[in-house]
Image (cartoon, rainbow, N blue to C red):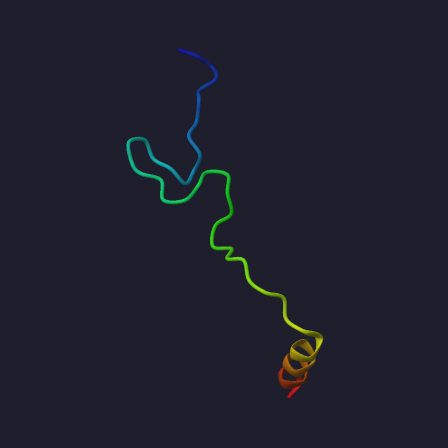
Length: 48
């Protein structure tokens, strides 16, 4: 018996489909950056 075994990544099982790219981003959707004014308003609202 070999001492070193090849192990599958934790998120996959043999003979089952993979629903995300193995080395890509997961759940990150590109968006547009917020303006400084929007950030200031969000911070002011969060402090209340």
